[in-house]
Image (cartoon, rainbow, N blue to C red; front, top):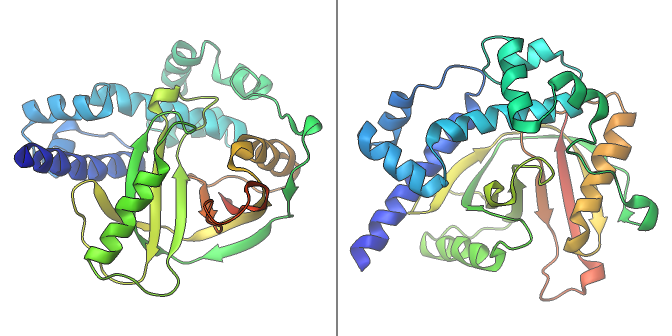
Length: 286
């Protein structure tokens, strides 16, 4: 039994490295041999293991990452369709158009024009949010421990994820002042199927740490962010995102950088009333 757990932990650790590589290299050809090499599996085992852990073939995962990233850029950047096609690794705009229409049912130009094909309209007119105007901050790189989860955001076992991360803080003697809890929801639930949504629970740390099984170590890149402070229930996060992207972003001169948004959890839900919970949202901008 312990051997099986050790093997699974090893596979998940290698998968984290593979996914980080894919996300950082969408603008170029991603060679399956290279992925197999950095995973330390033979190509034969690599395909079987990656499919088992991802729930889809590695090629399908890469293709989906490209087209879903293109959808975000179409909505929230001013880049041309041609520029977006090359940014996410397509050889030509026509290649993107073909794949995009197959995936979303509309062309990139129609998607950009209408947006509401997959992006739900805001419900802010029926709910008042306690959210402050954003601060524009330039952040430095930060190291973190992280635990990756996949599935509908409302159903993920966040408590278990934080328990695992804090256990590593204790086991590796990493405790210092200034440890912060961040969440990285990579995908838009209005674009990506619920069972494919990805989320990293992260603890910002200030000492060197080691990856252990499904607990990874990585650097959260710095840069410019619009930081919103929201007070209220986690169940209204979708409305907060609607406000930030549909009400704020499109009425500014800022564009999104190709980085995931971040959520910083300031309050502890077991110690603070639901309507008093404080969360910061970090929107990467340029």
